[in-house]
Image (cartoon, rainbow, N blue to C red; front, side, top):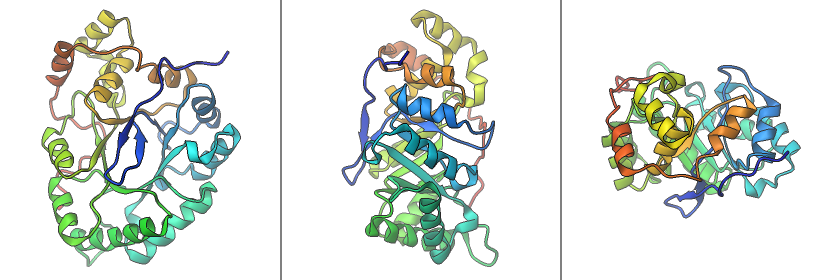
Length: 285
């Protein structure tokens, strides 16, 4: 039986006019990769936004799942990311085109620098970010990527990039959940016209045992996951939950048929304690 989403997924407008769906499906090597789950998300749950990275090691399989779904490429939003091992002008251009070939797509809707730190000795992080970003700017102008952005970048990384380059990132994808709310970074991104995108919205499962989240979930007769994803979306954050379980994916998509009251939004806002459940870029120069 086909699952019908409660309501269609809204989109957020990028500075170049493109519309990115506010809810996507993350893919990763952590916990494995499920071809069937991706096909299910696309064909049964109405997912139209897929987020991946070369580092996750599933580009080829993901491309096959997209083709198997039968959904026209123009109806999908596909994000990929560049790992620091491929930073540098020539290496970045080659890696993007190789990833494109590996997935069997003509373009990426969004291509991100995955991390602000360079892995090349003898070159400062700032210099390497600028050199790599110039490659992304060219890929953008050539149409290999419809938008370009960064991931795990903080305010000082973005400030330097703005000084060194000509295209302001369209997106910054950062860890975001009730326990990790980088409000100054979000404010900066919005002032600069950078769309803020959040990954790990369920704090790698830590929200499931939080008494406040559980209490709010009971009030709305929703799951803790749905409450946290809804909170993220209501804050205007493009949200990327990951799962390889069909039931979880379906659950994560059922977040448009209800709205959290302002008092409950404020309660969830108050849960911030600064914890990271994944990489922390704080000490990257």
